[in-house]
Length: 249
Image 1: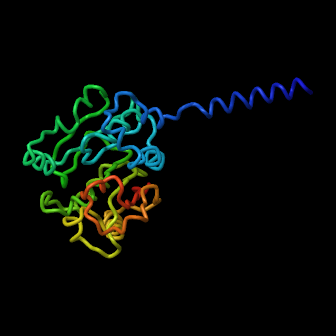
Image 2: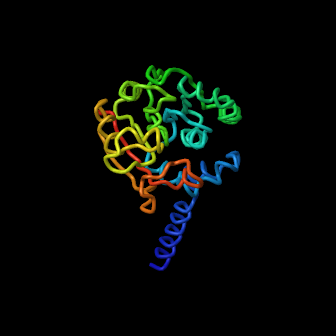
Image 3: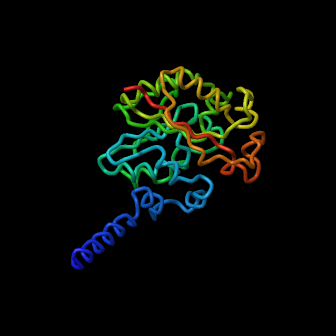
């Protein structure tokens, strides 16, 4: 009997040790190749919670739509592994904005594609989103509001339909953005760089998606949703919504 108890205890301890091992998400976040500038933003951007909510797994095909400097692109690459793929999709509207600012795509993503061979950079008009294969998840973070701004001059409804078409049945469209005050409408996308959450839901569901989950991980009740996002120290500390949509099976 005592021997049985000892064996059970040993098994329990082994199980605990296994559970304590770093998760794939932890490993992706602690990857030493991540730039220090990215790591410094982790406290505000809460990548562990967001990645867990999205449900990114090995072998998935993921699109980082308007990936900026590749903050999430790098972590996606680690999570999907060598048999998965990450498409970093830059709309030509974004390319044009970078040029006016004296920047290039290379300066945005740095050497990420050299370090991580499962990342493929794609360019094209956002309304004509086209990818080499059906995908499991499309992710866009703090960009949805930009689709309505003059500098992008896009058709958000057309883009949402293209995202829908690009996804496999059951695929996920994950949208994170700075929350505007309720009922603020479209004018604040330009003036405050925020998005009316209810409006985003209506538009994305109109493309055929079903809203399946919401997360308050980036909610910030101290932000009254009326400040301009790019005020000093505001960008990673705004009140943000996190919406998970699914393409029906």
